[in-house]
Length: 302
Ligand SMILES: Nc1ncnc2c1ncn2[C@@H]1O[C@H](COP(=O)(O)OP(=O)(O)O)[C@@H](O)[C@H]1O
Ligand SMILES: [Mg+2]
Image (cartoon, rainbow, N blue to C red; front, top):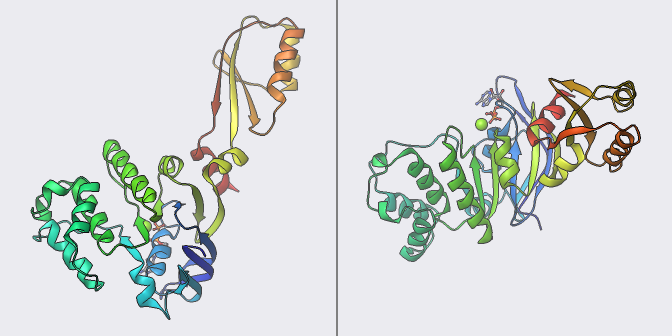
């Protein structure tokens, strides 16, 4: 059984805007899945629909086997949601907001469990402080703690690190990896490609309301990624001109660039054989792998 199973989902807002078209997606138990897409792509719409905050027009969603509409209560109790907008001005104490949230799901009181989440998220010392007195980073972690207060099996985070500094972002990634180790399935949206690259087992790319690819993060890079070999040549000779033509080398300041697909295994060795044969000497070389960023831009360009 999958953690989340979505089929043939459509969403049209009342003003006629078609936000999501024929979404089919399966998220595996225990994985970190990142839904990657630019602003307005439909990420929040999808999360809000899965979590029962917004209505869909068509399609079916099941959460660990429970239909998210006809079995809403069961489905919702398995879900924790950290929304895109965080409430920041609460006079409530950290621990009280967790207790209240846990209570909403009719879960038995457990200070042991709540203390554990607070410790895991480095919030234990702030337990009795009012939320409004915390730093932005702590408030975000409180939102995560709150979403986890009823022991959900799946955690949704809508752009958890938007506008967050680098250090805090890395800390959050560690928190999410720890949750994964504890068996929580994580579904997050992001428009930071690096976040997906660093954190996610699989990535789905959404663009204009359509999911255009779903793939293992490493596979996506392998399949669509390119490498560039950057080389500086000592002397420009006639034979070099032929090689430039043969390999379509590009000139970049004092270097030449050879672009090739990751799965093209022989091109580099052939290239060096040709250099050797023609006694062309080089001074320096560097190989660069394209980032998920470049892959992403290639994808939405098509
Ligand atoms: N309540 C709404 N009513 C009308 N249009 C909406 C509403 N919410 C979002 N949209 C539109 O739906 C599209 C997808 O938005 P959203 O899901 O928020 O994208 P993302 O989270 O990827 O930035 C956008 O064009 C947005 O303007
Ligand atoms: Mg959004």
